[in-house]
Structures are given as C-alpha cells and as structure tokens.
Image 1 (cartoon, rainbow, N blue to C red):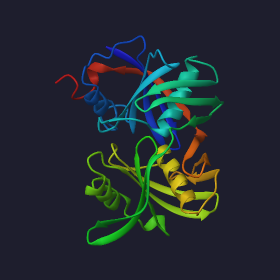
Image 2: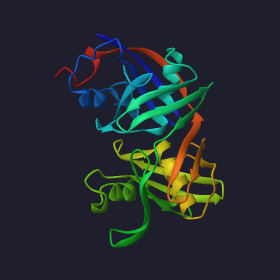
Image 3: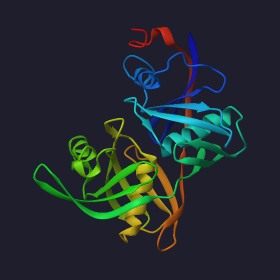
Image 4: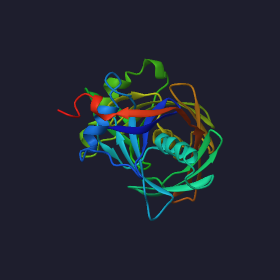
Length: 277
C-alpha cells in the first residue's frame, strides 16, 4: 500500500505531513506508525509526523506525533510546516485555521513566511531552583502550548545540551508530563540565541518554535528584552516572536518564520521495518 506524504522543514525542524482527509492509514496504532516513519535510517526520517484531518470547527484538523511516537498538543514549527502544505493543497485562503488539542490555531501564509497565532502562555514561573547532579540551577518555566524551561547561559557552545537537557526534562519538578529545555543567551534587548532539548525527540533539535516563544516571553518578563524579539536558532535562522503585555497577562502571541516543502512522494507501507511484524 502507498501513502502520499510531504517532507517539510522550518528552521531545521523537519516533519512528515500526510493528508489523511480522504485516505485511511492502515494502522490503529499511530504512535507505532510515527516511530517507524520518523526513523532516519530505516524510513523517511523526521522530528515529527503530522496528519491533516477533517474538522467541523476549522479549515482542517491535525494530529501531531513526535519521533518517539508520543502525541503532542502543539508545535510551533510544525504549525508553520502544516500551514505551507495546506496552502499547497488549496485548503483555506492565505489566512486559515486548524484544530489542535489546545484549541483552534490561526495561521497566515505569505510565500514561504508563515505567521502563527500561538495559544496564550500559561503557568509562568520565574526563577525556580532545580538541583541536577549536586549543582543548583536557576530556571524559569512557562507553557506555550507545551511545557518549557528556560536557562540562561553565557556560552551556548559549552553547554552539554544532551546531558543537562535530559536531566531537567525528566526532573521530579516537572513530572508527570516532563518539559522541553531551552538554553538561552541574551544578545541585546531584541535578540536571543537558543539551543533546545526537545521532549519527544529526546535530544537537541535545530529549532523549536514553542521554545523560541517561551524564551522570548520569559526574557521579556525578566526585563532582558522587549517584543518583537528575534530568536536565532541552532541552524542560524531567525524566528520572530510578537506578543503584548497586558500587565497581569501576556496575549496576542505570534511566531513568524520561513517554512518549506522539501519534497513529496509515496510511502510504501509494506517496506517500513517493524510495521508488519
């Protein structure tokens, strides 16, 4: 059996997108399917898998799976990628909406640039003390659709993102859901640099949209920056984060950056290792 797919990328985050509105994926275990097709050595390979579904509440719906098979509520770069594919497929106009686990997400596509209206941030907690390997770290936390921790570092190149990121991701302070972990350097009041350990990918990724938003919001709340804020990713691309501070709350949060379709093709289901065992 063949299933049509698109391979997409946004700031180095790559995703497989499948339009499943009129096709049936022959597996009830979509988590297993996601793990198999995201395998970089045995299949297409990606940080995540996105299904475009029908929706009665928006132009389309989505389901998002990380490469480890876990289903996530939201993904900023994934949102930009699915918007580019939806635009290519003629779904909605330049401004479109899609249904997620955290509600309706609005996007606007202008050529390769996509502006995503993010969910309002919640559960903001500044300057928490977290102990890892007998060392105390000052971190801040916010949920931007998914949970994020932000840690400030003077030299990002010296940070052991895999080790420290993994330990904080599974730290007791953030159980049971765990958290993504962002290591951030403040360049000036409008620019940050970031490296991210992503929950679900379980390693460092070249970019994270919700992480860029979390880092911009926390940096603003701590007085380091003012919106709009450019966030320079590991790949060197810039994501721009907009939001408004209403005193007791931060709202009208937008993430802007480029997204591209890299290729499209047919996935031969019978050839994917592990799916038919």
